[in-house]
Image (tube, rainbow, N blue to C red; front, side, top):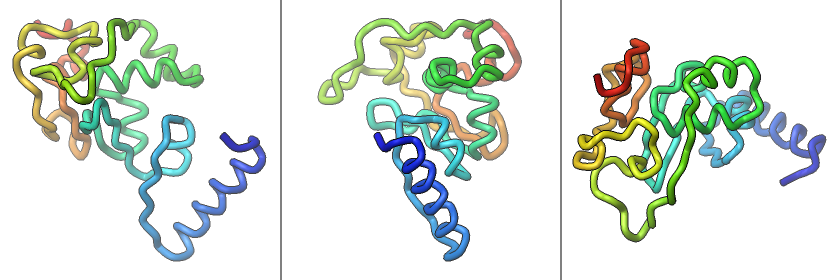
Length: 151
């Protein structure tokens, strides 16, 4: 929550130090635009679990998890929002309690694509849908192929 010019200065300093000293940083943010600017790799978490992880441009330009898709549509980025808005990714329902995680996929209570499978089985974090890009969603392949989810 820094002033825009101070924020830009801090981010540029972090990037300069990262390059100059070959540093690895763990940068935690809710701001996907900042994450894209500063990161080589992004992990998206929901209720304490990684639901998507991969090279920044891959995750931002081809989000495979419905939660990541919804976050990106909500972020002010007209080019991606326009592509994803065709799918409309409404997040409804209540956030599950972190102390009482529901069975199955943690996001199923809010996911517009959730099926009975999602309610029963927690999807593993898998990397076979897009090389180098991990996702924990039973239907990630459907998103990539443009198929109706779960069909």
